[in-house]
Image (cartoon, rainbow, N blue to C red; front, side, top):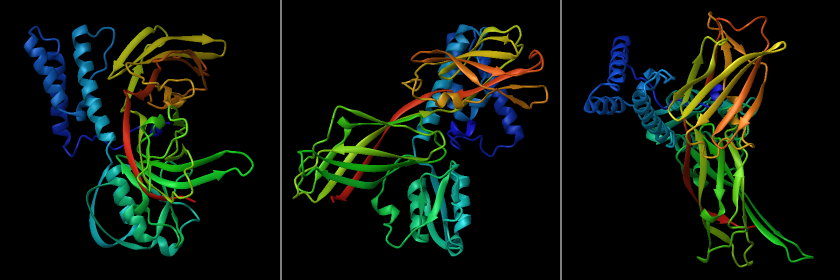
Length: 424
């Protein structure tokens, strides 16, 4: 699904009217033409001006094709990559919330947070009492990151989050009086929230085997769709209540947590060495979560399908090649290759996120014709070949093949810090 790959709500065109948008479109078109100007200074100035316009022009930049000059292709590619990087940097921050008021209805607060951040917040059916839905809260948020703002609202309303709901949203549920305040035990880092869920100590009585596990719940803003999450145990620091460093089991290992495309949280189990009984608490646990995130989604459109052969189109850090469209008995195959400049391991065989990318035919009426399955034809470190299958009554004459994929893969780290974990 497209929604599973978008970094929602990061960049908008703003509140400019149609006339201003038309002026911007004309300005971009003029600057793109100047990328192929005869004078080097003109070309460099146009590239600089396009970049200065910011991410709002990404949708206005043309896709490059085999007919695009090498100069324009090079400079336009650099512009896209710089603008995509701006989007990525915004994605790696917590979405800001600004809201003030007293005795505000809870539903209105959730609606405003969703409007400002692109993060859907819902009541889980059957898990919230009517009187809890009708609560009123006081808020005073000025550019406060999403998770901090939401936790303060939930604590005030005596609610919490069920992290494994069936839809891509924050699923709010009621909580018991014994539930700890969400804002007290969590660590926040950009769009991620870290909270210790369990500490498990195990001592075998009949053999010398023992272990200590700390289970972290890692949640992220629903606007994100992480491709992978990793914790290098070498980047983990654990200190007990005596100021001594606790040993980590298999310190050279790298833990990767499988991520469901529709999920908004996972659990990460950290393996430690069980300390002596006089250690009562983990005073500090610090780590860095390594995440692969999809960048802004780019749309590729291919026409004249019957004659198409190795038609290559590029945008930002991705190239999509329509190899050919051919008939295979009752099925029409649309064979494409998707190649990233830097996949950063995102195409490894155990990661199936890319198969959720939208790929469909489109008729003159604009209605999509979904594919009837696909086959993988090629896989390398940075490239994937796919044959999309369509059951059609006749040749795909007059149809357009549409493919959507993130233009970049973003690899970044998020630091977290947990304090005061009591040992069992």
